[in-house]
Length: 490
Ligand code: ADP
Ligand code: MG
Image (cartoon, rainbow, N blue to C red; front, side, top):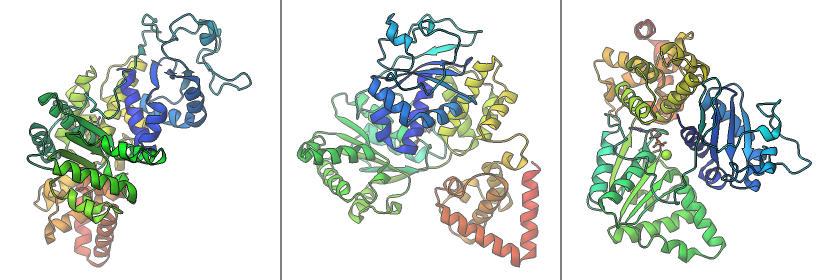
């Protein structure tokens, strides 16, 4: 496994937690240069000592929390190296100070090798570092991509299609084949980690490959907003708008960030109109449907509804297994079908978590030298709080519950997750909410997302309804108990 995969994972989490500005400003230019799983230590290379000090002072905890989880380690030593690129030369001053501190400041982290004198700290970017006890010492050299261009890792080829995403995938592919002629705008929505960003980049990459001359612009909504604010501050509003004049394909990710940002919505509205009138393609993603974005102007909502709205649902077990196998293959991780099925059945909230689980399992296997088998996967997932071997409640997954209820009510899982509102489907869906809540550790929000992108208030409503009915109707109560025990005994 490559350190850059862990680092990319880390960047995704930070982006979700703190927004893309933090990533762009501080972490984008940082490289995870070395991961030593034997000593639980990593080296981060920074472009300069200002960024180095800032990150160490302000983001220490964030780094520790997420990297420890991603590397599945209870402790982590971080070495901060400023001026990457220079570290492989025998510049004594730089090695001597693995922590680039002003003279009076004390190091925040202890060296993973306390007995090693500073000059013995090996040059971090040297390609011929030894491995310790056969534990791999991994290196990575940064690849920088210009801003606002699609990330070429996210392609249609690497996107696994299943019932949960076939509509969005099909629409995105159609758009990439013929810009501004079928669905304009294309609006893709769905819960976090379900593939929105992946599809958006894939449209950009595919369209570019088909028409090499075209101008494609990808950006997140909060990048758009920050650039816009900057442009106003520096009196460059006109230049800001001009950037979009010659764009053939505009891809804006996570437009829910526009909520309540009146001025940003205003400028976006004009850009949208101008591109649309010039028959240029626009693709947008969002975590909910346009009408559900609170604080989005009506005129924008209605424009977003002009084209096609396609949703991404939580993938079923088969799709999760296929995705896991694809990711393992891409990252040269060998997993048996049993392990893939095990991980996929334990991690069902979203695909990002699925990837994270695979990375942790692989890291743990490298750390301990054990092969990746079910018992190792179980230990890793248990430690990281995903799934559980000894807590029977956690072991019952959302899918298991839904399948059992669908079968009982003679429906399909897709119908339970669908928008259908007839009496039987609604009741089955409410029972599903109730039993998932009772038998699994998932939050109201993730249950809602899983059950067709509903919000947590819908889940609360369902729980109340079922509890009320249980209180009033002993036959119904018995039925629920019977369903519950059928599920837990599986
Ligand atoms: P979102 O933008 O919806 O939060 P992302 O597009 O960032 O989610 O997806 C999270 C991760 O899951 C990415 O690494 C992406 O490549 C992967 N992923 C999502 N859906 C699929 C899929 N159908 N096939 C393969 N990988 C996927
Ligand atoms: Mg995204």
